[in-house]
Length: 317
Image 1 (cartoon, helix red, strand yellow):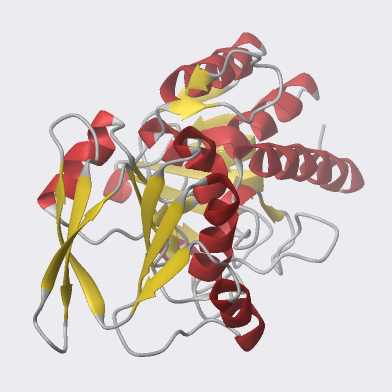
Image 2 (cartoon, helix red, strand yellow):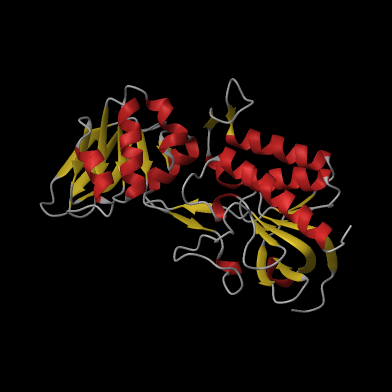
């Protein structure tokens, strides 16, 4: 990579709860962090209307407002928050090189915190997108949003462990849960399948795909089709949950950072360290289990503390 135009002590790649929390801790430790916000400044919470489960907001808060609060707090301690995204990296040497916006800018850094998050996979239906943008009953996180559908009927799409777990979670809150499975069997573990089978208010619809969502300002019904018989059915529901997986936003780091088969970064257990010295990871880029704003924030704190100790061990002040 060409000579860097700028050198920084701590570079944070990606925003969201993990990145902003890392920035707050790093800035307070006089690491003078520089943050590139990425393709979606604020991360997945920018698509979330109501956040009711993050401590410190007794009346709840809208996702974008919460991200603005975190950004303001990071900037209060003089984090340099910038627009732009990382398009290339080189982690082969003692200094780590990062290319921004396809080569418009190049930065070298003593330490790097990756907080690029993960993106939920969606079905791609026009009304799914429209209602999701309206905050009208479409979600990819039952733990986050299930509470809003207490005693209502909901639909969940998916066949893996996450879908089965979220279906049983929703069943505790909702009157009826329709679980749509595209084939005649689930990919979920036998234990999770048994939990679904033994939950009275979950109805599994096999060989079933979603055709459309009905509703002007919020989900009112879901039109589905049996892929074997061709029969169509309209399910009355106010919530539509998609649990067909997430894709971590980590492709740019693949030549250098150890990842699992899905692309989640593998960290040293009990820390935020990666296989590359001086490169740390926080948030959903490494977390396929919890995927909550509060856990992302916690790992952001860990990454900043780990980076601070790393810099101290190298005598970088």
